[in-house]
Image (cartoon, rainbow, N blue to C red; front, side, top):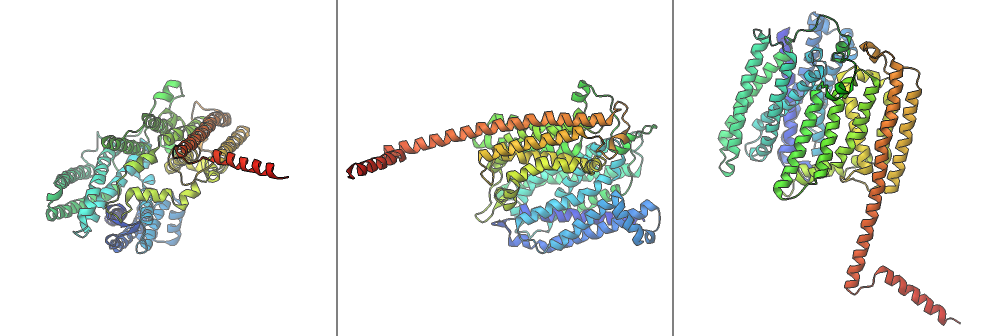
Length: 615
């Protein structure tokens, strides 16, 4: 049974990696024709269909054999409709595996119909989400250092899928298409390799028991996988050295090396399938049961003090990886401008850095740690993620930086990465989301949907739910402050008066929410905080009401700052408009042309003369 489980897991992994690599090649590596797939990219649609179908078969097989392994029964028992339905509808792991299978089938169903770059990008994002979904209920979910183990494994799988999938897609391209796709993939592969090595090392450190694991089969497979990974890195170095020759590239030799690399990767993925199907020799757990580890994956911290809040650190690897990627891309953009001879305002860089630091403090820092155990600290983290950090990031103008530094089109017909971003910014969807009413609904309206329904308690009890909640806070804040005080391009021009009205509405709605929370007489966490049995938190209702007052106090200040910034922007725009009119008037006068005021005065004089002539 274990052998069949590994086989289906391997089919799922290699199919998903090849699917992601094919979508990557279609969306970004090959040329497009004004936002539509080129003829070369359309040739990959049948390959995409086959890879997605392989992924779906592997995923459904993984569901069956995982259920049989959990029940320790034969396949016939796992195939019983009642048992199977219970697993995929009532058990979290079954639900995540079913979601992956549905994603694979969706991609297969749409593979032969996709025609536009944006549609391909959406399928790529959907495929990545489907691939990583079961990881949140994998073996790492029960190990120590929960956020570190889960997050690093997600990063590892995503980076590996881009690297391995990209190499498979490059190997299957027509030889005449490789010179177009390889240079761009080479840059992306370098980032992916760094992420694979770093995340794999962190995950091994977080999960493995280094004192007693070296004589196990699991350790031997890990060592062999590391050796093959080093071999792949060496091949990647040869690729980059070959590409550095530019006009003297040995493309036939490059193709042979690509096929060898793809074969090694296939073997490496098989090892990964075996590792994911077997329990790792984890670090020894303390003999005393800790309910907080069972519920939140984190040991209960000591009572909070100022030093513990500011200096404790419980890394959330997935959030850290996203922040590091954002900072790296931002720094690279600034470096590109500097090499070009352009300047980027230092204030924008500082603002962006402060926003990123605030997110890290509210998710992985001491505040993020205590936010798992106390509603009041959770509300402080919420305010930082949704109202303070977004202001810094929005004022850092990352979209403007991206538009100035992203790769340009490679020929006259290609839209390219920069053109795709512009198309997104000018799309109807972007215009919808940047509507002030829509932004306000996400910013304040979602508070009531989250905290006054059962969503909050459900999300706090799972790593995926907690991550989704944090991401929602950040994105809702970014959208709102982008509309109100953003310096990046906006698909719609919003009058300053409308912005001020929206800001006042946000203040009122947020105050009403906070008062409702302060006045509540029942707990809204669905039993989450009481299940942690935190010794230094005895009155949960008082802590919840304190969180409401904190939300009121901390929420009004950033909104008030946004109101002041809107007024200042209004005054500056009026001043610029007045100067523009003055310049136009002076230019017209210098050319001997009457300005608007002179025309108006002349008109009044004509009326006066006409009136004086009338009897």
